[in-house]
Image 1 (cartoon, rainbow, N blue to C red):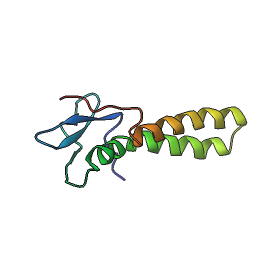
Image 2: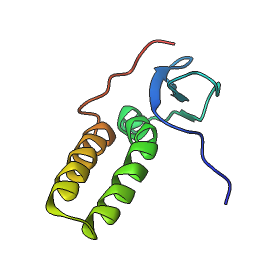
Image 3: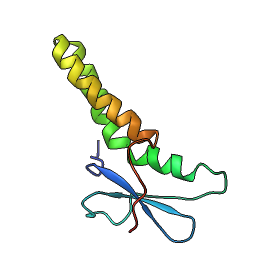
Length: 96
């Protein structure tokens, strides 16, 4: 399997009404361009930008199920942060 672009990813303004999802270190010019007229552009961009965080959260939770309660609590903190980012409650669109 080919590796994905490492996170974190963030949302930046593109041209016009478009938003761009880029890696936070700006090594990749653009992971995705999000545009549309359905009013969900920001929500969609937030969800895409949270993909690396959601992957880590899911992997952490699965690993924690086989460990102890402390590991599970640590993994749940990671998961909650990823969910907030995906839902657009912890990240802002930043200018490019």
